Image (cartoon, rainbow, N blue to C red; front, side, top):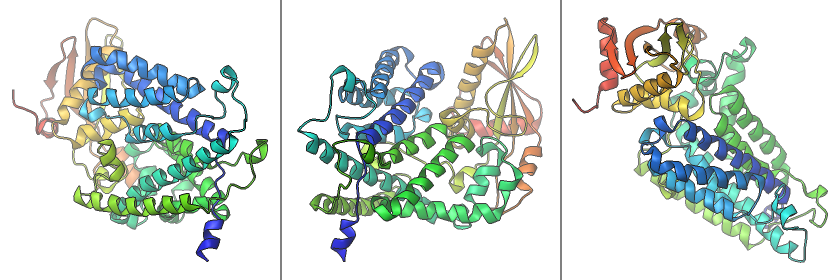
Length: 451
């Protein structure tokens, strides 16, 4: 029976699917670090020393994107990412999944579809095709292993989460204003729809290795792409959704359209058994490491030296300090700066949303982030001799996780409390006289060195 089960494992990975994965992955890498390059005064501690490395990273990721000088460009991209990470502020670490997938792609087959190398070096199917197919099969097994560990990490968090165990996670992520990209149509708001979908997400992540079996591949592939594209579109996590969608492209079946490849690439050999053994071992190791580190790090995080934290975990909805909104005031009047809308919806995305919406509120001395971000945004937008960056706050903390259809409108209707302003040039802080404003600013200053 076990032999029959192994015989149903089928690897559809081809040069074309690896090429599609590469294009999507390095598109995100290029865009993510282009944002870092453009926001250097805010994101990088030592701008001058980091600029050269950033330029190398952007050029290498662009070469990886179009498929020129593979695998040299992918290796150079990964080395540049590892070099630039220590130069970033601690609260501006680029998504660890980018680093993980860049490491993963070092093991990708050298011959890939949709690559300029195929034109420049005239790479075609050759007598060594069997070796190329071997590389593709084993690369896809590695992708499954990595994705399974990422999903398993998320599943462990969900199984110990009150929000996910009650089936409320997708509803909170879709309707609490400051954690969703925009207000969704009322028809999607039904708990009858979002509660079972919350449990299905957990089931999908836990059972993801079944994608290796022909009979399950289509449903897992469609479900996974739909899930991550929804994250890209509906939530302020465009890059993360694109990254996970890119990895799933490895399992798109292009074999019938590639002459010279076999329709069946059965994997019932020792390599699949070895991969399963490594998978089981790393899952146990992952679980142990998460428990030792208070569910903050898994095996892959330890390997990469990063500290990932879930965005839609319970703790993110119970952060006491309020969200902050920025406006710039000049002789022409008041204008909003990228932060939050009057209703409380984010007007920033991806890393900026995490930094401004969560890290500034949850980390010790969040005022350091607040001041640096406000001054950077103000100086970039001020076109007069004198401008003021106005700061206001709205309470958004949730005390109890229950399905309450009035909660989104309740949070949206809460008033913005003026806190004060930064005067430009110079950045002098002038605090509002209201005692409530003083208490809020004091909460953000908590943990800052006295001066």
